[in-house]
Image (cartoon, rainbow, N blue to C red; front, top):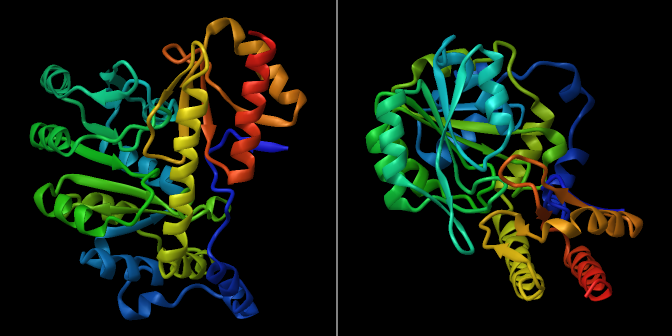
Length: 341
């Protein structure tokens, strides 16, 4: 089976990550972390704080970026308040708000001819009307793949200084420590959520982290774990951070294959392939071929995401797999279209 529906990284983690597992002793499984003896939460938060030049308390760890989202909402969104999220975004955002009895309000993510963009004017107008307690900004956004422009982000953050803003960077393919440091210095009311699942190919270990603005002491305290974190996972994550050259090469391969998707699927009749900064692409297809194409691919052991949401209901979200997998998907879709021309 070729399973390209969950945005995993099929190139796998860096070799050093696997070596780290070989060096884990049985005692590492048996005892709690002793990082607290040095006055820190964990070895991983200590390393990340050093890389980002933050106080160690400003780095919180979680069960993937998912937990960072939930912790932020649980800490700051009260019953009856609203979470502000983009349209065309991850459905799970809304569920997180519902879990604490809060509501949702969507600000526009605008579909243009062949890309999606954030609309700053509409955001400001809606913010002033709704006064949300917490705001999520996804960059790159899932499932549209677009990032937010720096100028637009600045306007968003300048407007929302009275709210808690979570900047979801789960799909950033890189380690932009300098840019994040600058954001946190200028906007102490933000949380930057990141994960080792996508770029670092460690989804199975469920490691995420949040970089917390200095104003958000409540979240730092709320996320504290008295007995520490998963020491084994932390050791693997540390090796991933030491392997940037490996991951940069993988990112280059993925970018080359995204270009292949753009050129090959983009010339099929009725197809629109949206540019993506993530490890997936969104493809709009003719409505009438959705079900037959799905069956055709499943018959060939190919699984991709067929969107079934209110605004995205005849679209494909295709994870960027290995080069061999990507070529197989492209060939199968072209075969289907040639047979239905």
